[in-house]
Length: 309
Image 1 (cartoon, rainbow, N blue to C red):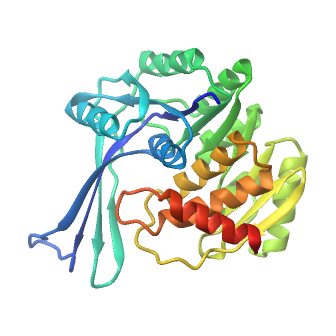
Image 2 (cartoon, rainbow, N blue to C red; image 1 turned 90 degrees about the horizontal axis):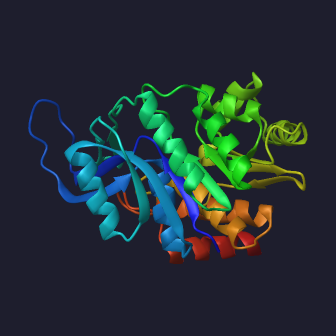
Image 3 (cartoon, rainbow, N blue to C red; image 1 turned 135 degrees about the horizontal axis):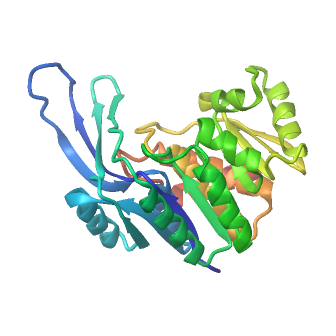
């Protein structure tokens, strides 16, 4: 099995902590601090490693925080290729307020990239050998909206299946170009793609299926938050409810979904089973604190429950 390549243009060092109450002005004393490598594609790579699949992370990083990000990835055994950028890698922070269970998430915009740096990323992708290429996350400042469409072209030339988890115009342009094997918009992001908001689950499933049958993507999952998710492929439509699990943190749930899905595909599971694996991984992610990703035992247990149900 070839490594699954993940791409992260705007990674971060993700800090997380807990405190009793978040107050303005006064110092907020925290505990249980964690530091993890973050950003869509890096989170996917971390989960793939947890599930037992080889992953190869391509990411941009710069400055002292970029070096610190390298150290965090090295400590977690993530195979990787860093594309140097002049800007400084961002530092994000999540604080869980124990008295209410609420999370406060602080996410900087990150560095601006120039054209030479963008071309270096594309060259790194050309050189990577893979059957699956996963791009996840928003585009940094300075990167054209058609970037993921260009990545889909690279994947097509390599014969790799392109998995895309982003939103807005970059998602629209990539889908319009063709070559997206799987996309995972939220209900709101899907509404923006089709120009219509659909609340009824059955009607939403039918719209997702039409999206697939029209040849825009090979497979599509629309996430519905506390209502679960709907999946469309040429085999039809499948719904999955939100699982009843203890919610500790929502950080990384979407990236875990993508990782579970592509892990299942890469290991030979049919698409609808891959969807259930994605749901299981996303649900398992909310059970872990702060910036931790899902645990393999939780994913396998939840997946088995979905299969038997």
